[in-house]
Length: 135
Image (tube, rainbow, N blue to C red):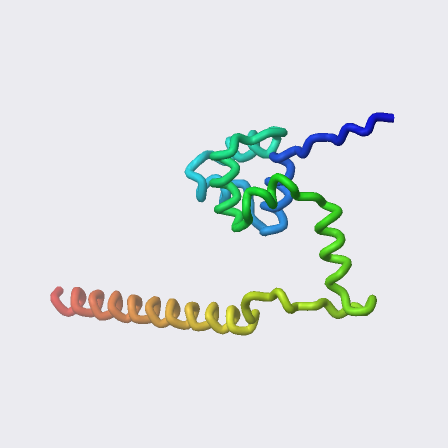
């Protein structure tokens, strides 16, 4: 039985963290200024050069060490410890925003967009009426 540890697959770690961030390859590619195919190749690569790893880590919002040392066991441990005494209520102490505030922001943006669209339509109607009056 060998005691040698299997080296970390950095590309796979990048993929897992990207997925946990709910980010698509295309979004990561755009943020890095590369193609989606390049991200696919990187995620299939066992080793990633340090410069590239730092840029990817910055976009993913984690230190490069987190990518290097990422393990699914740690994620499962964190998820397992997120429950209070085995109950189904999740501990939300790490939430950095209020979902209701985000919802209200979206609603306000949609209302403003709707108002701008209505105003644009009114301007079109006024212009058409003016053109008809000139005939």
